[in-house]
Structures are given as structure tokens and as C-alpha cells.
Amino acid sequence: MTYHPKSEFIAIMIERGFLADCTDYQGLDDAFSRGTVPAYIGYDATAKSLHVGHLMNIMVLRWLQKCGHKPITLMGGGTTKVGDPSFRADERPLLDDAAIQANIDGMQKVFAKYLSYGDGDADALMLNNAEWLDGLNYLSFLRDIGRHFSVNRMLSFESVKSRLDREQSLSFLEFNYMILQAYDFLELNRRYGCLLQMGGSDQWGNIVNGIDLTRRVLDHEIYGLTTPLLTTSDGRKMGKSQGGAIWLNGDMLSPYEFWQFWRNTTDADTGKFLKIFTELPVEECDRLGALEGSEINAAKIILANEVTTLLHGAEAAQAAEATAREVFEKGGVGDDLPTLTLSPADLGGGLSIVQALVKSGLAGSGKEAKRLIAENGARLNDAPLTDAGLMLTADALAQPVKLSAGKKRHALIQLG
Image (cartoon, rainbow, N blue to C red):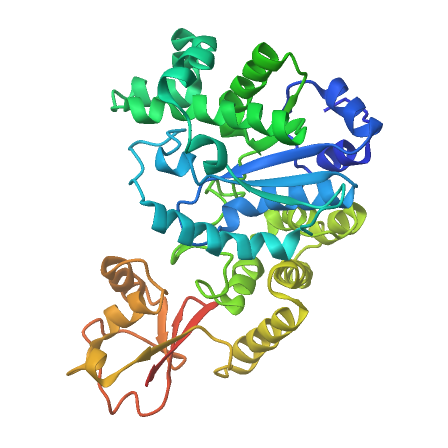
């Protein structure tokens, strides 16, 4: 990236590794230099919580606000009813209004940790695209908006093309999604003066559509900026773990498990993740990321503490670190470990150790749990677990039982 920006925000985007592409670097940089820029990222309400895969773009909105600009979090109350087909192999399950609203309520809790909402110039706005999409008249929309879209061009976008190339069905409902997202940008520009849409690089086609539509309908100059799709150094998609998604809501994933996810970062990713997911100075991120051997573990603890503090607060981060130290250094149990509490009815005549590993989140399936035991990767109360047929009875659970998968993942099972 050879562009030398004038504005603080673009400089941060480049320096910290947030920038994949931009529709007009010079034009956007000039806009940031002139005054407050309202910019948005859209989030469809497909789950009750955001997950680690969303965190990079939440940090982009946070930096935007720290640089004196106006973040807009656009909740997809309308678009969630359609579902984004981008790079998916199948159609999303359709949710009703109540489920969509419940998901939006859960997601809003996370944004409040990172952004300051209010009525000031640089205060964040929380909007819902159902506000303008729910009341659309189909014929008017087709005539006024649909005529600006070329089906030939829409078919050429990689997200659509990849689905068709695999000969997987793409419903007309989903095909409309990119028109609705383009219309969101138009409406945000018209209603709130929004100049910029940001998103992952898989959103490039949708963003460009919105810019073209706004130019055609309003003759306004607006911009798009994308962040890279983040993968770990071993090529996996960021945010997936053996136990499932790394949720950002504390009631769906404990602060301790969240902290532990970051503590388990690979050596090669530590410096990169410090730049993207913390606010430590870039020089410090580079210094910590360059540490080697056992010293890199101290950098990973700093990473885990910084990221957990931003989301769950300093106390939660300190408690997680203390629990981790107790578990790893002293072999203790630790008060903060993820805990599975079983009622006598749940337990019945006993719980198989395979099911215990699955229910506690240490294995994704029974097959994975059996493989873990066969490969000597599971422990019960710090002793190797070799019998996949073992049953946990009420007597065995008279005291809490500690289960471990590998050296770093632990859970407690207790009888309620």
C-alpha cells in the first residue's frame, strides 16, 4: 500500500492492517480531512449475539469515532427477512419478526461496549433498515430503483457467480438482497448524510452497487472501504473454535472462555491480532509480536487482557487471568471455569464421559470426543482419560469434576 494519507483515520486503517480496498482513496481521504464523516456497517440479525468474526469491523467503527467521525450501526431488521447469499452454499433459514427483534436486542448490548451513542456530531447512531424497507411499495420500488440494476452485472459478482458455478440454487428472494443493501446506502445518504459504507471484502460487490445507485438517483459522491477477511496463520477462518462460535455476549460465552480464546492465539498471529483487536501503540504491538520462545506467552496474555477488557471490563480480564494461572500453574480448579450444572433428572442413571465432553463444549461431537480420548488428549481431574465408556454417576459428581481437552481447555461438571 503506497498511498500516504492526510487523514488520521485512513492512516490508522493502513498502519494497523484494517484496509483491504477502497473505491477512491484520494476522495475519501479528502472527505475525512474536511470534516465529520458519517460511515456505516450493516449487521443482519441472524443470531442473538455477534461473534469474534464481527470484531474487526467493530474495532473499525471504534477507531472511526476516536478520530472524531460518526459511526452508524445499521441493524438489518428488513434485510434479515431476505438473507445475504454472499459466498454461501445454501439459503439462510428465514426468521419471523419476533426472532429478528430478539436478535437485535442481543447484538445491541455488544455495540454499547465499543461505541458512544447520542445526539452529538461524532456520537454513534443505531438504526434499523426495517424503517424504510418494511413500507416499500413493490411496483414503485421496481420502477424507481430496480431499473438502475443490470442483471448481467449482478450475475458477474463473485458472490453470485461462485454459487451458480457450483450449480447451487440461488432464489429470487436472495438475488434481491444486493438491491436492498444498495438501497440502504442510498437512504442513509439521503436521511443522514452518510458518506461511507464499510464491510468485509466479501461485501465489495454490494457496496459498489450502493455507490452506483446513489450516484444515479441523487447524483451524490459516496465511498466504500473494505477490511480483509481474516484468517489465522494456519489458514482457518478467524473466530471458529472446536467448541463452536466465539460469541461476544457474556451469557453465550463466559469472559473466561473468551479470554482463553485469545490466550491460545498462535505465535505467528500475536502481533497482527494486537494491532487489530487492541488499542496498544503499533510499535508496542510489533515489539510484542516479535518475541520468541516462552516470552511470546507474555504477549498473548497482554492480548487476552486487552481484548477482554474492551468487551467485558478490566475486572473480568483480571479474574480470567487469575483463573488461568491457577488452572495451569497449580493444577487447581478455578472459580471462573466454564461450568456445566446437571440436575438429578439430567443425570438419570449416569452421563457418559463422551457426552460430558460434548455438553461442556470441550468437543464438538461424540465422534470428536472419542477421538480426543483415543489420542490421549482428554483428562479427568488432571488424570489421563482412557476409557471412552466411562459413566459419571451421582457418586462421582459428589464433588465438582474437572474435564480437560488438551493442556489449555477446561470445564467443570457439577450436580445442581
